[in-house]
Length: 246
Image (cartoon, rainbow, N blue to C red; front, side, top):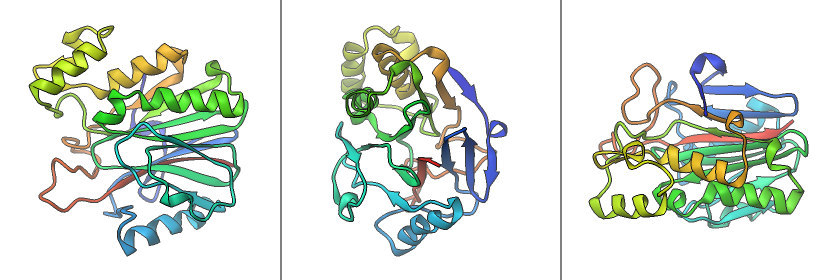
């Protein structure tokens, strides 16, 4: 895995942007306290503002339900945002696809050879049920992506330093991800969802050098402002991590 920091990105407003030849990927932050909560008028307006900010035609997302369901966006679907699931892939140009998070793991996927992109929301349920792996499988099945051409970017999330789970859930993860040494997967009852996602991506065939992580914890990061559900007092914003084909 390759670890990135904020300095590896272009800073634009309250976004960290990584520009590729054909694909751009973006992680939002909370420096301007701008939330992307699709359930509020402010959040919807912030989502729509991305069209002008990034010069794209559409912004697409879905109703996240902590599942392993991945949808394919094929264009011209005004009702697409009403789908319930946690992953989107597309080969449509000038269309942002993204995931909302506030501690869960955002995973962005890009294939610059076939020009296919994906965005995944991976909470513990999605992580346990291999949603990132399933998104890659769908990129291969639907668009003929070569797994060796796919790059994965893991965004800010609640990391092992702060993510304590129940003893029951710990045992389930140890049994499921038994290829990861327990002392790496857990520190006490603190889980590394990132290691599980990395393991899934490598299992399906992604190269180690094509897996990246922006090593920031939403719960305890001090230098960069981020939204965190667990660190909030009942009111919290949403980060929006997204990717698009130019």
